[in-house]
Length: 293
Image 1 (cartoon, rainbow, N blue to C red):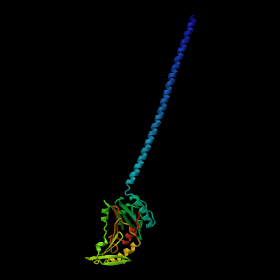
Image 2: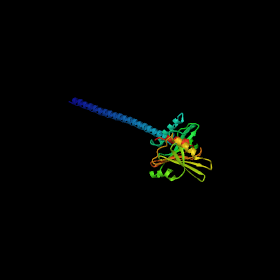
Image 3: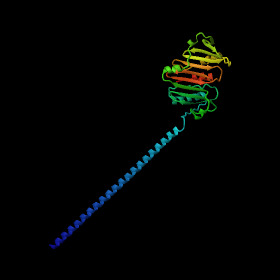
């Protein structure tokens, strides 16, 4: 009997020790599992942080690059356009394209230079409502709006000025009607074109109207500048190059004698007045006759 009790007690102790061992193994296994999970989470966190840092760095680099490009563009001075034409016809076509780009696709633009020698260059100031384009006779080609062109003298300027109303723009054109010159002597110029001649105080003014246009030639008996030959020359030029069509009135004012610097053509269009100025009548009329929309 005592022997049976001893065996039973020994078995019970063995079972108890085995149970404790299993429980310790489970705790150890659970601890290892948690440690492994924490390690995996830590690695994922590191990867996420690295990816985030890489993305942030890339975004920052892209932003800095874009900012640099904008800054570089804004610091380069006036915007330019390449003009690479081999002759003035090609160059004027490229200049016209640049003007439409900067001033708007509906901008009126000349397509002929009005010069038979030299290289035409150009730059402009202003915006689509009020601008002046400066055409320069040069020895070498430059890009449109090249900053160095501002130091040179233009042979022709083409400008637009916008007024508050169409009536105001119309009144700004120096138009002379034929009615104001009734009774003045007539001078035949060419074909059916007859001009009136107004003389006084050594000054002579030859004038005629054609459609919506008023044409005036100023001469001087003091300086020996007869307006009649210049008037006949203008008529011949206008038979070859048609001036732009005004809304209601246009005025061409010329001074007899070359290089006077007082040659001007202007006309109204809506609320705007367009003006071409220069010293050479031939250049003015050729350029004016080439204006396109």
